[in-house]
Image (cartoon, rainbow, N blue to C red; front, side, top):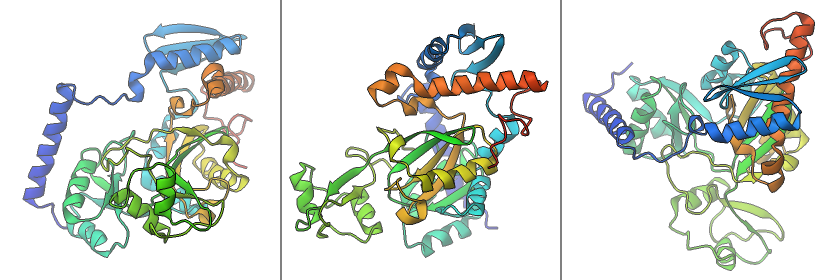
Length: 375
């Protein structure tokens, strides 16, 4: 093991200090899920009303929902669906990556390194054909501590130090330039899917990509690094001619998004009906292996209609206590709160089954119908 050089350790302390100053000065204008209390109260209270259940405030961000003598409690976005051990395991990215491998899901992971294994980390960069992604192995969400498109030593230093502020174990992955998707699973079944749609063009069997971009009114992207990387990963260039009617992702991020460090994934499209049975089934195997009742699974794929292997996509990570605010894009979703209603209905049914089976704590008895999602 090679100790982190003093120069880099000093830089790490400066990064930590700068982040503290920004937080104190209020320079971070990102809205995180724990700041969405009123928004989440609206989701859960509206869902309770649709179920004819009673909704009661226990504290500013703690609510109790009662129906037919049974109850469940919610803290903002956190529910009683999963036990603490499951939540802990789900937050361990290397553990979940190994589970994904066990169920034959493609992954992007290269390896996990201690912050002091600097020579080994540098060796990964020197041997990499693709850009890298550097992230904490545990203890972060909402893009915190994550850097994408790492291509040189300077960027690797910064990315490694940023990730180490959250966990001394550093997870390094190859950068897969595709659209980020999240599939939401409840009791072993996918109930919703969303994606961050990138920039696409549709071929006409005669025009090169650069001409298709001009036709669609896109700006000149020939010098845009994100576009070049996305095209290169698919064996394409700006001069490639796309077959008639074929849709191709030529930029994995929407126009205007190019940040490489701590870029939060803001989903902008519902894809529930576009997710094919192959992808549902293979991600469902992972969820059952992890024994999560309520979880969002993050993937990279440009074609959710097929398996990850067919699309060239990869599994990224799982999110227990998933933020349901990601799953409201259509007018119907915003008005009817279908995700919150399904989750709340499930929690109340689980409470009923707990009482019938004389099990006091929801989520621990995996032999009853509620928890038996092993397939």
